Length: 66
Image 1 (tube, rainbow, N blue to C red):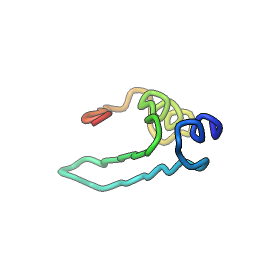
Image 2: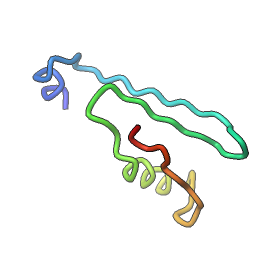
Image 3: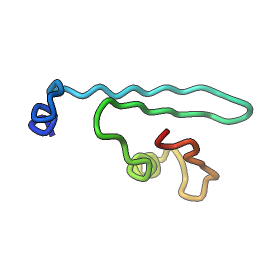
Image 4: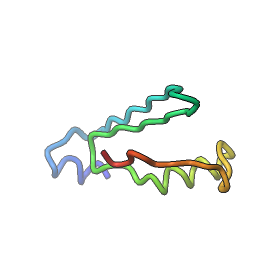
C-alpha cells in the first residue's frame, strides 16, 4: 500500500525488476523488489492461473529469497 511505503520513508511507487535468462538447460526467472519482498507461492499461483506453467511442472524456487 502506498501509505505503508510513505510511512516507511520510501517513495510511493515501488520498483519491481524482472530478469530472465537460460542457464544450463533451465529457464531462470528472477524477480527483485525494493520493498517487503515477493511471495514465491503467489507468483507461482498467478503463472498457473495464466497458463504459463502447469501445477505438475517440475519447478524449483532455489535460491528463492536470497
